[in-house]
Length: 106
Image (cartoon, rainbow, N blue to C red; front, top):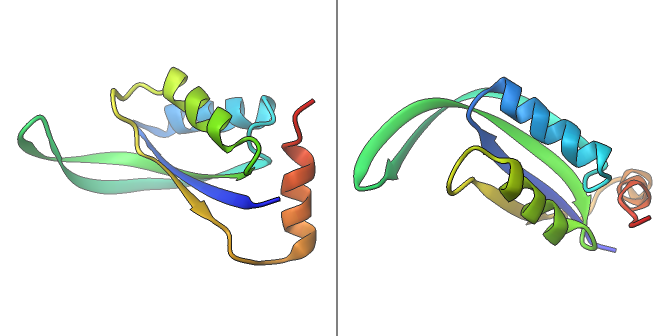
């Protein structure tokens, strides 16, 4: 089973923690790392914007990836949240198996 790291940005640490807890509690992610404050520069509605956000990384399996994306979109405050899935090419097999085990549909 393929493993994914899912990179997400959130408005603030409260939202990042809420997303992280929800995804882990609902077994859509095995774990989440809240990386902390980041400075973002981006285009939005035709204007150049700058602001502070909080980034997080969720670890999930291929079988839960699409559900995880849909659930984040449901609870995220942004109209167009950053949700990017990065396939994991390799790593500690025990860790990758743990992610699969913790995200198996019930």
